[in-house]
Length: 342
Image 1 (cartoon, rainbow, N blue to C red):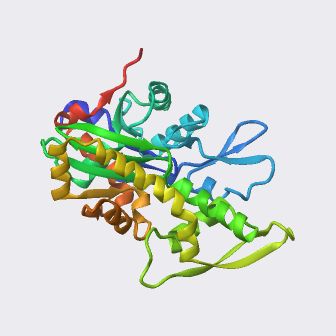
Image 2 (tube, rainbow, N blue to C red):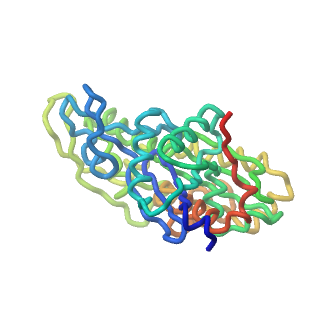
């Protein structure tokens, strides 16, 4: 370990729409918190960040608002994002380091230059010395342990909270990719809208997420599931209980899943034939929180006729990829984009 390493600390951040994960070099994943900030509306004062703020969602009094500063994988509220990143960095960087940390942040592959600058500026203002951007599908592939530097094609589908990234990777680069802003959040919205439209039942975002996790599926299940859902009756205006089955939830999710399936098809159509034959051998790797939706791998297998494998610990693939980059910086320097001050 060099003298320089003792002075500073390297940090990898998976800045997600739903959750933010932080990896510290030589320590592993040290933080996994919801990307939510509770703010006092009148003063703009931050009251809570992370899990404590998420618990307030949909339950706050008029003067307090629980905000998710990232929308569709990119920064929607600059000031609050900065506070979120600064708070998380403060939690993981102890004051024993003399220098500010070097930070690798994963970003969606479809991100614009303006959005990149917002990510970089947020991290620099929050206390980063150098900021490197790493595209999410590349981070996920490295996190899963795929040999991204080889000429053989690898296909990764990373379904997060805000974006789904579908990419074919070879020779340390993304050969072609489709980044769509349809992912876990849209699954939640679809469940909310379905119950509203069909049963006049209004539920909150946290309840929708709970339904998705407990009984959501993309493919018929061997044994269908059901659960009781509480919400508000839109006609009578009183609280109401409803039994919802996994068949109904699957129906609610159909359109959203179709959009992801279509994006996978498009990516495959644009893949050079040599790499397409590699994918036929190796199959597709599914990562991100969306990979946990029951039967999504089966649905993709049915649609593409390709083997589909769910990465183990799929929620942390992206941040583990950022971590591997930190542990072996010279090897992975080619996959990073150094953000310079313009």
